[in-house]
Image (cartoon, rainbow, N blue to C red):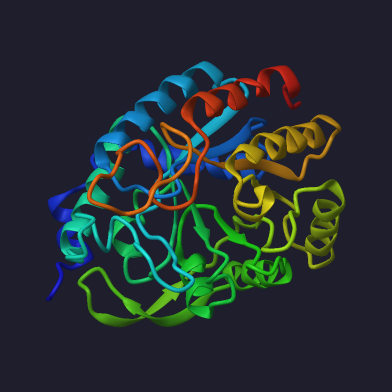
Length: 332
């Protein structure tokens, strides 16, 4: 099946307001410490139901308005899910949850959701998994990521170098942070590479480099890496290479040993490090949904429970973000 080009989809579903550009600028100011607030990226492990995604966004917007003095909240909007072996690959690939693999609908639904969030003034974060999909949504993303399974991919490093928003490189599944740092170095530079242009044609593309690439500590299959010693070691490696020493801590995945309730402990531990004066931690990431836990793909699927990794509930998320006011003093 032939798919519409990025240009065609963007013409049919255009971005009509300046909010995303403004949110991207705020993201860059956070990275550069021009904005003293703490970044918190939170949302479902993956989006499988548009109505529940909208409801989460409404709640996040209301909370964001309450804590805007101390925190900049960004919603996780992951339409692609990397699979180690097999499994549901996300809204983009199987939007109907029935194995029909209607990618065309997935493209439109995903872009429509990002546009709705922009209209609600909810900044969105996503992981760029398939570089061919990036041109369909690159104008709508406030914060981007290269995941643990693709952090060593030259293709993804080149893509990151072409994007206009901050890009986080996660340490790999074995906990190797050097691969993320190598990704940062590559993304900072200009590249000429193969990709698709706005008309969907295979082309020779040129990137300008991304000065806002950074490391994301997400733990490993064996151990967490949010402790102060590991963070200081990572900062030292970045400094030795002349790279920005800003990094993000993912409270989920290996850092909570895939036990979602332990994200609470990780979150508080990192906040305490910030309170003790660590200025290298620019923010945290949570996997959070309307209800806690996760579920298997079946004939009866709850819209409010994660279909992939287990998440903490919205009530817990709200409490954690509110705790920023009690634990962290305003940064100078």
